[in-house]
Length: 335
Image (cartoon, rainbow, N blue to C red):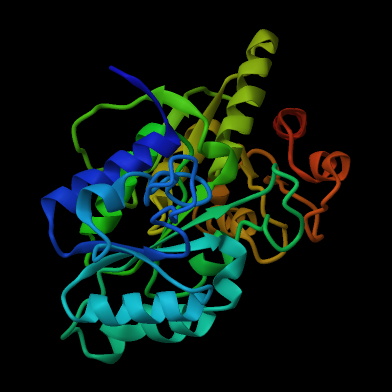
């Protein structure tokens, strides 16, 4: 099976879906790559992270639409197109910019099906990059998926690897409900085996990249890879853990988490987001409510501090949860 980056896997997913369904189109800032790239040809770059590279050359400017810098216009146009039977893939350049189009997302897109009595659907995907690690500072490094998970009516996807990214994006484009798709900046260059053919990964089904008996670790997005490093480092101490990657935060695979906690009796939840009202607290609360009798130790949460993301590389490195932080939390549950 070929090795591919997540950037290439996401690009492949869009090529598959554009070719399969003529109603699929993309809209966003610079997604056609502009006309001033290294070769001078439109589409030679494909957005600031190169994910849409080549789409406009293959499918034309009517299906790969560059827009002005207006997130509210991008999402508003995409929402109207979705209600009209199209399947737009809108790109918000940075997840932080959901603040600019929050009304369209929260009060319109998320509520169309409910407010129209189920007589319409909104097959809209909004892609964005998320997370810290590039010294992009406080306004371009937030995760934001924890906030969007709190909004009823939205499906929220947070892949951790290239294989999942391709399969989940294909599922997102084929879904009849609005999907927010969060791509971590550090994910784009990560590599793993990815098939050439199209495949879909169902929403609401967690993956378990590590299995063990002493502790359950739930992590999101890039933190899945950080947690895996921590778990692997503990093997020399005879400590083994289940590592659960929910893949989607809404819907959430509660069953897999609860079954694992029932077996291990311990839980550590890891996320790059700040701690207050976040996913770690949400998972901890769910397990305390539905699986309290299984617990043999207090639940531990590993998060970034309740602070804006720093710009300086040294401060950003200190801000982000690290493998040693996860390992320390796991050891704490075993005391």
